[in-house]
Image 1 (cartoon, one colour):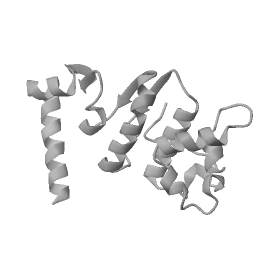
Image 2 (cartoon, rainbow, N blue to C red; image 1 turned 180 degrees about the vertical axis):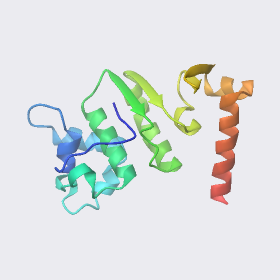
Image 3 (cartoon, rainbow, N blue to C red; image 1 turned 120 degrees about the horizontal axis):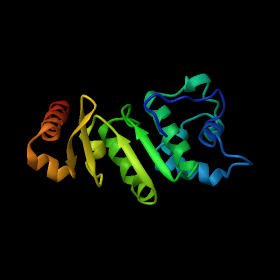
Length: 168
């Protein structure tokens, strides 16, 4: 489970990624998980790399780095079910797209549930459920839902316009 609000410990980045795994963690697996979560480039700039102590609650990390650390932790544990609850909300859309591309193979090997307010996060899902007031109001693929012109299509148009405005 990867939550929007991440809890990290005042330990090294490697220890936070390998949290919950018994025995001596495989360093190469930690680095692979960090790479999939697109944390590897940031780690290259840390004073002690994966051995950098990140402080209580990850105080030395940005919001996006915290979320990507939690994603790396989830990947490292190799779960049968992967649940991501707005786990990419603190990263920009380009980084989000790159992480989702790297996660594609991981998600194909297990049941994956992604909760998000961003259409870009869920657009490639096999099934998208649109909730309003705690009820499912639409269900389908991205293309189906956009073609229907309902709640999802409106959200898609709004977010596309916001991205256009931000780019200009």
